[in-house]
Structure formats: structure tokens, C-alpha cells
Length: 181
Figure 1 (cartoon, rainbow, N blue to C red):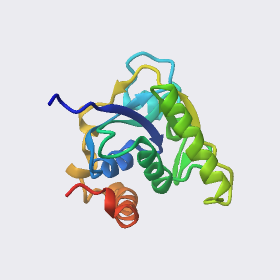
Figure 2 (figure 1 turned 135 degrees about the vertical axis):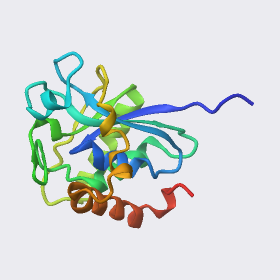
Figure 3 (figure 1 turned 30 degrees about the horizontal axis):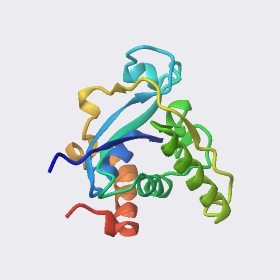
Figure 4 (figure 1 turned 120 degrees about the vertical axis):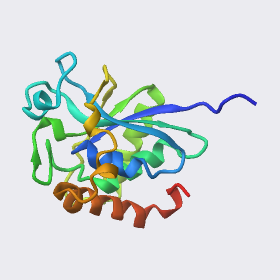
């Protein structure tokens, strides 16, 4: 039997450290990389992206096995661990680089993203409208090495303790069935 096929999901929902820390724990996820997508500058740096002038979002590129975790599941996790109703902001992180966005890689992913957003809107999970962008994935730029696995390497750093940790805990509580064993 050949190798199981994988798919790519590219998601943005605030600081990429938070998303990476959560998706690293999802069964069926092979790898998670922090990076930048959706902007106009070639090979942007963290300083440029944080400056808000490149148009890029901090995002994660997730390689996953759809036989173990579905794209829809990954999106439901995204909508649990960040606030999709605040335009260009997550908590104290403000700017277009922190926007809520789903960068789809196929028409099927685009359709699922639109269905999940419609479902969340219909169920009124949030008091305000969902502002998550659904757009075609553009060129991906991997973030600098020190951003990769940031939470795993720096769990006691202030931002990790007060922002990333609670998001990981919320995910673990809500999606215990999706955890790697």
C-alpha cells in the first residue's frame, strides 16, 4: 500500500504561535509551519509583517491526513481558538497581519470554508458577524526559524503563558477526541 496522501490547509487567526501550538496537537496533522501569506512583498521579514506594510497575514500551513482529520474539523478548531468577529485584531494584537482568514487551496476547500462560516453565522455562535476572509492561497513564505515551534520551546515566556496557553487549554478541553495520543 502506498503512502497516505496529505492535504494542505492555510489558516490565519491572530498570532501564528497560537495556531501552531494548537494544530501541532491534532491527530492527523503531520506538520505545522508558521509563516506569511496574502501580501504584496516578496520574502517578507517578521519586522516588515509586524509593521503592517506588506499586506501579509501571520498564518500557519498545516499538512494533514484527511483520512484522520477533516478540513472541516480544522476549520471548526480555528473558529474555537480565535475571535473571527474582530476585523484585523486578536486581543491586543492589532493590524491586518492578525486578520482572520482562510486561504483555500482548492474549490472544495473554498466551499467547505463558506459552509462552515454560514453554519457559525446561522447558529449565532458569536454575538457579532464573522469577518473571516476566504481567499485563494497565494505564495507562502515560511517565517524565521525562531518562530517555528515557538510555544513548545518557550512555554513560560509571558505571551505564551497568558495568550497561547489558554488557547491550547480551550482546544484540549473542547476537542479531546482530536488530540494526538
